[in-house]
Image (cartoon, rainbow, N blue to C red):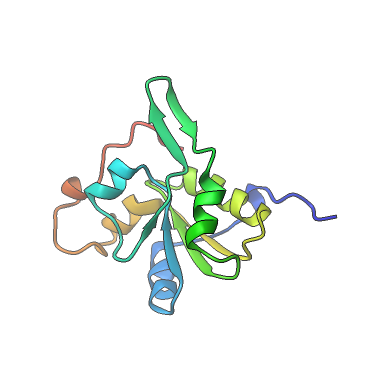
Amino acid sequence: MEVEKRSEDVVTIDVRDARDMLQKGYLYLDVRSVEEYNKSHVENALNVPYMFITPQGRVKNPDFLAQVSSVLKKEDHLVVACNSGGRALRACVDLLNAGFEHVRNMGGGYSAWVDSGFSGNKPPEELKIACKFRG
């Protein structure tokens, strides 16, 4: 029987490694909310929210794995990212447990991508949403 994967089993990479992997054919899975994604995102990113913001707070997307499986194959090579790293780490655990084999968490999330200057020439404050939900 497979041992259930935990956050310690997730490989986390920095944004420079992530950029290199994307240039080599990895796919970018953005697990931020649609609102965050629509404000700004990595080119060619796929957006499947891991959590929804509701009046009661954040709620995990109950269809996350089904939605990911409808657009990606388990053998695809993925870089998974959110705003700062917390949601993406949890999403990676779920993906590994669902049989996705080639999953990498982008440490620091989209905020680190913007801070590294990879998002073009817009000022960072125009690209990033103030994140009240770090972690």
